[in-house]
Length: 232
Image (cartoon, rainbow, N blue to C red; front, side, top):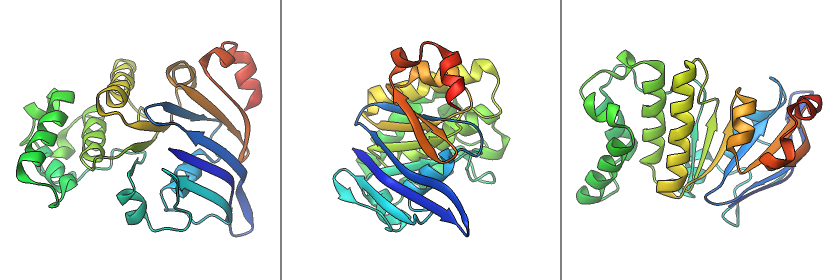
């Protein structure tokens, strides 16, 4: 689904990513972990065309998307949910979802897609007329995920979806991400501060340190978390 090879990113004279290679499989959850400043968000933004790499390659579903504009990458089947609950705060929940749908789909298909989102997030169904800015942080995160899903992606990239949420809501968000993978058949690449939970949750994990991939493996490869922390 996604193949990144020898990706290098420079900001001015500072190198942020150095020859990063990673992959994400369809219908799998792939985690990126590492300390703040390791380059995780830069990697996601580079894949989605928001940062221009200095070298390397990015292939999405077999096609090169390196240097392509974000709109093209989105049309290829990728969606990016950045950190910070990016919703239209002054519009209702329902209007946020309608904007995310756009105008391209048939009316019956659009209605079915909305029904699927409301089934996944019943609280959004209950609060269709409420302003998005009046939702809790967890509910805004659900709305952001729902908006991304309405673009019918095959790959979703999530940057810190649990930031600022209470532990019970963190569990709920992680459960929802599993449901998205299982119900919608979406592959997911995720960055999150809850490293222990993320490594146990993901099908495969890549560890970044100072802009380089230093380790990778499945949950069974990282059962000793002290070894994992030593890689950071």
